[in-house]
Image (tube, rainbow, N blue to C red):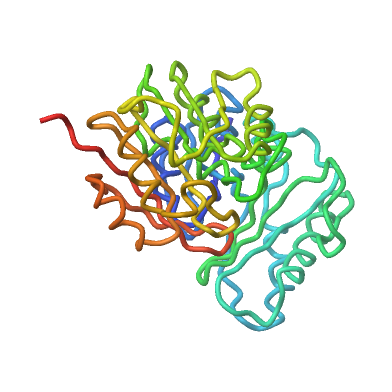
Length: 357
């Protein structure tokens, strides 16, 4: 089997995290890190087929199909990108896709495009130019995203323009990796699963740890935690019955307990948590309720209470203005990572509690 060049797409800011996961799992050698992309080359005899499709911190994984120069700003540039379709070795791509756990024959084509900077063409212009060319080469139908979601069985292609290069990619799996099968129910403010997986990795969870999420929502953080770190004790709490019900359904069959409780007064002893993972309601999609509605400081005081001496918390913050509240409780921020989710800037912050003595 020919060595494959792959590209993992991710949340902006998680590029180093995805690269670290690729290396940690021995999936390949990193060849390039760009905007929301990590390129890597797998060995001729990679880990078991399908393992690449289980990258937790990546939004999606693609085969690198073709590359050329960025076409720039002019409107005619979109049509020129059809040349990427002509440069792709479709037979080799189909074999590599099957080897890495993807679908077999390509029965239809759909294309998604994105680019950095202003252009005199739209993403749909790019998608249609490349999509029609691919469909003609493959002898199958093309579904334009101007008309909505494609029917089942259409292969997912992606075109990116980063100011220097134009890249054509072919998705390995039938659907994007970030669409987790366990996410049967959702609630407002639910966390993006690859971002939750990155928070789990940042927390350094060990087997046997007790892991708490005081504002668990649909349970995403704890589910990602038990999938990455089997053998832990995972407990979630939320003030809303809808969230508790969603988390319980999503975590069905997993060692996760979910309880109705106020994050400002959790029903647990002092120092019980080795790790805390949290995406608290800071007033964006979800307004704080209960004791947190009266004071954001209450959340930090309770976090400090439940953390074991030397314990670690990873918290998603909407800005750095929250840092002084955590520091005032004796917590120490030891790592800060800026990410961008759904167009909004946020920060992943790892905190440690003081050790005894």
